[in-house]
View (cartoon, rainbow, N blue to C red):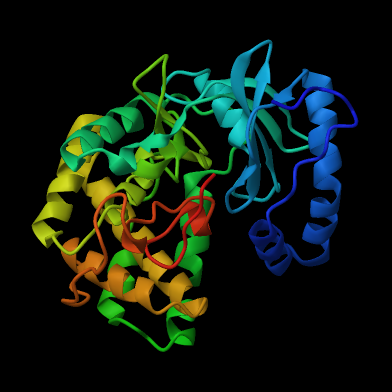
Length: 341
């Protein structure tokens, strides 16, 4: 374990994280990376942290195992963008109820000191018969009154629906206009009479880890304020494999809706829109596998997109069950993207 001395060797930033950040963010990302070792050193000094393991990374963040007064914790430092800017706000609102506990934070630095969970034990490795009810219960528990300052689900709806036609045209009309129109026909978010609820748009099985205080706790939230049904889709598009039948997907949706106490029609229609949105984005990015998996999932949801079945291995295996986080609009169909933290 490395001590607190200022001369301690700074953590080496992984080359893969450097390359992806610079490719995505350009000179601003390169400057952030240059300052990152010093920022980590300053946070360690300020919060009295000793290094307790190698630096890990995900899509927009690095995570360093640390100890403070022999208590195991995790120091997370994120590139601040729309997907990560309100993570601290959400974790404070949940106060450890159903989610990882926030011990300390620096919003300007994008830094969080978090309780340490069992990263090797996630719901991605639990049997689906266990994982789906747990996820549904967390959907329900985390849907508390939203704190002020969050982007709203209604903003997401306006942005997605407003661009569907042009994006569909630009990628060569990969599915019927009838599906395009059906995907955009989402009920308006609940009116002013209904309270805005805290929604995690990236709740998937890989972002639920085993804990000590509670059996399962959510990490890496991408929060919005609005209809909790918006958060169902990642629990459908993750953990598909060759054995998954369309009826399994519909059964999973029904189980999540029942456990979380959601509106079944809203959950279905929000999920269809989010899958179609990701399908278009995957084509825009030049992906080849994900669009076909999204085509199959749309068909399983009753969108009449096409018959192709998912490929890949099951839970804990290959990339179709990649349990994506920190990605496009809080994640996407499994396949060609995957992250750690």
